[in-house]
Length: 79
Image (cartoon, rainbow, N blue to C red; front, side, top):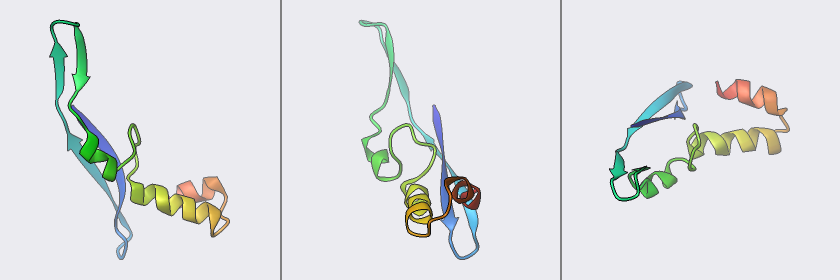
């Protein structure tokens, strides 16, 4: 399985980066369910089920809260 995350990348050049994280999915024959490998180490990089790294989230919050940029304008700024 693979998870795609959007990151700020290089701040000097303004070029965003897309990060692909590969993880394994397993099947339990006893309970007949699929489960993903433990992604605890990923929590430093991005919140669970998020498509954005913590750096992107922090910048978006700063743009909206501190710079008083409207939410939509902040999201366009990060694209």
